[in-house]
Length: 295
Picture (tube, rainbow, N blue to C red):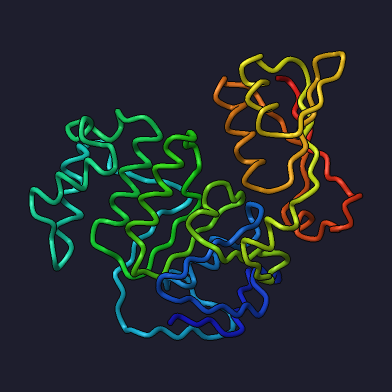
């Protein structure tokens, strides 16, 4: 168990973390939600030992941990190949992967055909796969993933979810993000950082409170997608070809977004911060409006 007690962090007179209490358990991942720049990364750096708190204490169940860390600001050795980099990090572990095991590992991350590419020649998505592979390669006990979905398309987001679930079963896992997405399939416990305080929720609580959402799409949606939507959701089509989709749970909302994004549609969402969604009234009369424009 890793336990944080009354952690406070100040930068000059600015309080970033205010008496934060947190308990981490193996096999029970935690997602920390919040807007950019409010202290999520600071909190994880304190947990990792990269920064010291102004006040408070942290207790660990072991003096040493193998750490897997995917930082928010990515960084790679640009002039080495994928194979060379993974060989290097594999050599750092006490129980190195064999050549065959490393080959299989590379294939799992769908990097096999890129193993001889220089890192600087990879796409952003493939560079991110390499960094995730580096984070997991030595079976870390403590894993922190800071904005793991940043810049990834839907396919690779889903691949990341599978890899994260597989390689962190016996780890302490913290995922830092400003949007939930498919990460809800990895963790059932969510904390929101707001004004230096952590507020805890079960994922089911978030899903329950994101009911009664109205999604409005403007302009034409392709007919085949409209048929899918009409088959699976409560859809109203008005005379100007605008469609309104009634959504009653978080997963349905995610599915609708994915369906519309597959056509490369530009989607702008006029939404409310997650902390407001959490406090949505359950009366059945209050509907939060999500507007899709420029479709």
